[in-house]
Image (cartoon, rainbow, N blue to C red):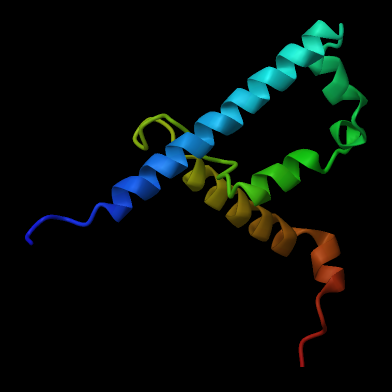
Length: 108
């Protein structure tokens, strides 16, 4: 009584063991590639997904990567402010362009 349950520690140990096994399998597979004279980089390049121009976009979406993030402090570089400014500039330029005026519905 009064002791914390041991189950969460076992779950963490199981996760760590599973990760270690996955890592060991990956290393073994890479060693096998090298032993057979294959270059992992060349094998990746042969894969048809490597030539897919949408691959990077899919990776960004899958891993929920902030594609405009920066490691600089906000006072030195704020990519969100630049993105916001660009969208405002686009809005202004589309409103002031002759094509936008032609495309706009006539005033009622």
